[in-house]
Length: 280
Image 1 (cartoon, rainbow, N blue to C red):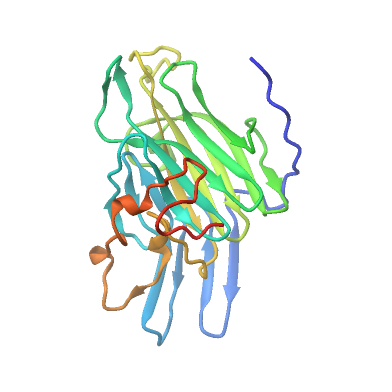
Image 2 (cartoon, helix red, strand yellow; image 1 turned 90 degrees about the vertical axis):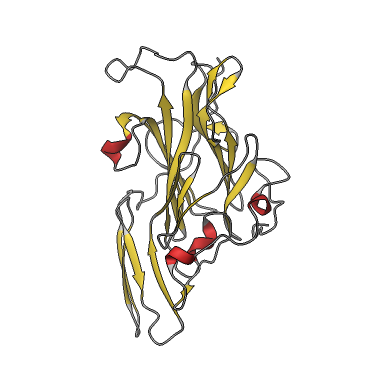
């Protein structure tokens, strides 16, 4: 096995996952707490729109919760690459695939197997791993494996990346489902977005994690996302939920723009070719 080349960026002074900021203006005061239980409220006053933002998420095959609490599913197809968020500063794509349960059999419902985060100068890949037991998940930046440990900071894009090895039930992290979480990746674009990606690996004995109960690992990704800049107006399957809702339209009546196939990338995991692309 070839050892990956070392990464050499420095740790930022604000690399804590939980940060508290307050922003004041003549019309409103915002209190922002970055974390799984964070919520953000912006009152637009006399304007026609009100924006209420909370942490968004995608889990399973995948079930989506938008930045304003919209709940919906994106039913893709195995092998498709789908855009989750598209912004002029950040592109987030995910590859969907099926979980293998036999030589030629799979569980129904494609799940997120890989994610790509592209900034102006860097590409972060988060992989859940492969169908073979030894093909474990990983995080890489520009093709170089990120070791578990302190966060890495890339000053040119204000990008923070970290990887933490875990062995915990998803419920202990406040997540839905009953999954075994083996890793957590943090991808933060300073002052703009923060993503926490959870590497799921099911199929092992819950008491003896070295013992496999299935012939094939059942690996996939879930993620949480936080919007840190309320002026951002991203698109994508998830990103579009950050746009303010008119006061005459409820969260329950929200629907995705266009058709599901409009969000399928035509040029792979690190691509930009889809109907609502904003990243260049």
